[in-house]
Length: 382
Image (cartoon, rainbow, N blue to C red; front, top):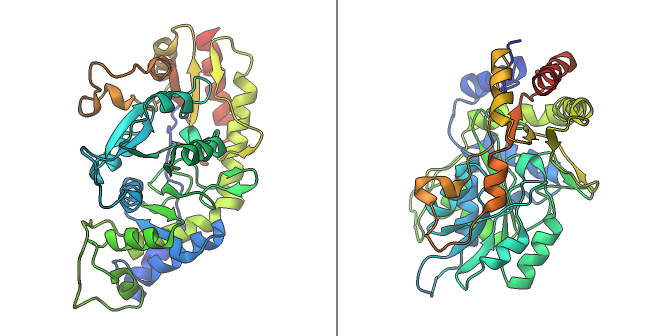
């Protein structure tokens, strides 16, 4: 077999949208097409357009959200802190750091890989102002409990929903409720802009701060660009970044959004269900747990390989031309985020890291492709 672990699913419609922006609109930066993409996403999620802030990456969206929700001024010694599960892409931690805050690595639950709120509570200090639940493998596990935890401790909730666009919790779309919810639209996500991201921030003033911050915090520049003008007498009162989404990226995203419900969601869910059916009886494989309250649109297909057989399985699949991945190396094991010697351990995260393997999943796969992968897994572990 020769498969891709993940891939962009784009074609003639996306190419035509880019051609139109280049040859007809003639303006490639942030402008009307970006505004239309934000309007489309707002309509899809059922939220106000003013609360949707697009960005050039998911990492940028996270940075904007942390910056907008961070208490200002900060009248305590040290940096404001955010509780983040260590089992996440380094973008989550980098975004917190980039916004002038400190990420605090937390342990995860063994059967979902999502934030362990009991462990997070043990790591609370007066400097913590937010928690960042990560919807690992598209799973918004215990998101209601995370919000209740935050209310109980006077915290904000910044959801890293990079994997979870199109998912629902109790029939509510992820991104339609909360404090701040951040998505990624890079090349292999549930929809793509080529690169791109977006945050939904439900406090109007915080959303305005984020919208300005993506354009170097030039006040009112987003509104000016969307109207086809520029701000020639600007004022700047906060740190900002060059984080805006271009019209080209937005054009791709608009086409992709139109394909999500009819094409991408059914394909991803069908293939994930086939994996679950074909691998459920293997004693050396455990699937991550999902709640019946959640409608999952899987970005990645993660399994736990038990009894120390992870490396054996990866090697056997590689020999068959089947790629695998590991999502992710825990952040507390990275040099930049290595904890102090007296920090609480993260045993579940480290155990999961020794077990997790990502199998191929994207809408370009056929049922026969997934069945072939499952046959290879079964042969390797029999």
